[in-house]
Amino acid sequence: MIHFNFTVHTVESSHEELLLLSCSGDVFNSKVRLFLKMWRHEEAKINDEDKKKKKKKKKKKKKKKKKKKKKKKKKKKKKKKKKTETSFHI
Image (tube, rainbow, N blue to C red; front, side, top):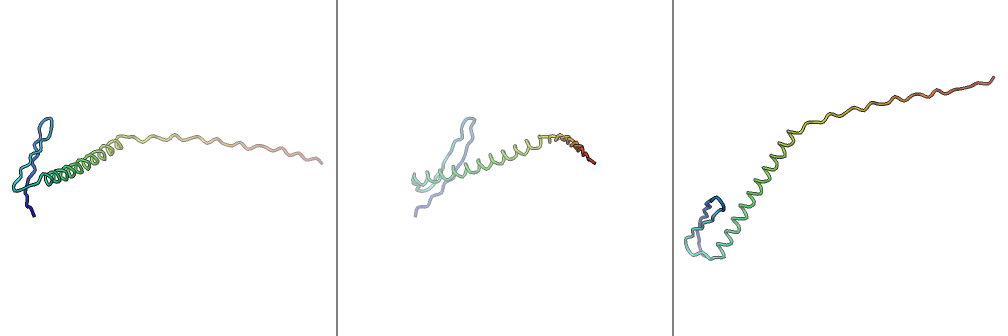
């Protein structure tokens, strides 16, 4: 079994994020690539969750800004009773 220890440092610059990898021991390139792939995947998950939280917060703010519309009451028309004429012949 090959033991390897390495740490990942992120350095944020104005235009891009630089990834520095410091390794100790015998590390195969494939192992390093696998680690970086997994690490980036975890970072992407965290970023997605943060974006979802921000969207939820924005939606809540929009809901607070909306005012309830007053419903106009429709006037009910009174039905006129028809007078029925009855005639009696005697």
